[in-house]
Length: 200
View 1 (cartoon, rainbow, N blue to C red):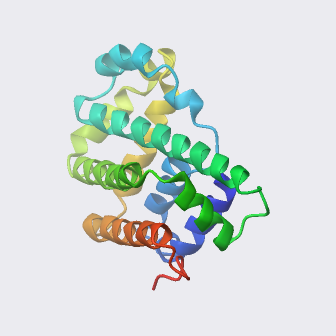
View 2: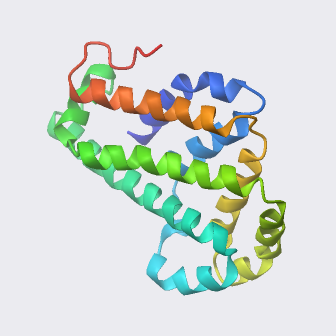
């Protein structure tokens, strides 16, 4: 299911992946937030590591880290629910029709909206951070202590996001592009549109 979704996202955001200034940020979202890989090393034991995060990471990045973890956990939970719906429908090979049926059966429109909201929130935070070079220096300075404390994956997540958004000429346009498409796609899926992915 995650591989099917990741491939769908690569197709729908091919323009962002193909543009030099948005390529890194698009890859960041596809890999770190919507990816089809295991992020448990980054996200497990949040309650345990929160005191360490507060002590070691720059304050401006704490909420971004928390939002990133929330998005990853929410996306994983929705993927599990979607996969169960697909199994309940017979687990036939995935195509657009079967995916759309599973999406509607899985439901949770409010959580789907929250998922999209979090993408914008994280993107806006990173977009604001890159205009403050001192934050980048603070983030790099926390690299070693974060790794020693077991927060290396989370630290790398923030560094990748910071570096990716530093390359974008128009962060607002980038985020608007993602937001509008994903909201329209979700609306079409829930309303049983005949061609839900045919968004131009």
